Image (cartoon, rainbow, N blue to C red; front, top):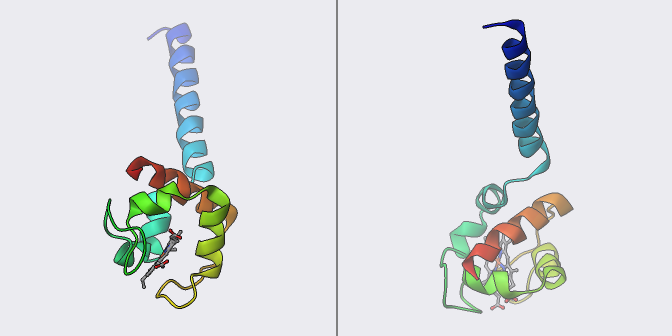
Length: 102
Ligand code: HEC
């Protein structure tokens, strides 16, 4: 390998490395947040039900973001849905991930 090729591959390598690093640092994993908080125990259906007992992921995806965030933060009184304190980044990542069930 001559030094020019070496330089080019080093550049490529660092660009790739920086990219994967920023992916993991900045893009929260929506599905991971959903699973980690136990949402999947109740919101396990992909489609169909839109209220009690367990709204499907499709239903969650149909809410606009501010309604989604409000219900997740405050819960829905009189139901099993309690409030969760989830940061903005994770909240948005979860919402974005849910859109694939729409
Ligand atoms: C113990 C079961 C349970 C868990 C765990 C749970 N939910 Fe719920 N969730 C419910 C129920 C039941 C409702 C429905 C209330 C109703 O009938 O309006 C609901 C409603 C919601 C709604 C509002 C739906 C709508 O159409 O208004 C959202 C959004 C939601 N859940 C998101 C989440 C997220 C995100 C998590 C995890 C952080 C989570 N839920 C965890 C049971 C649960």
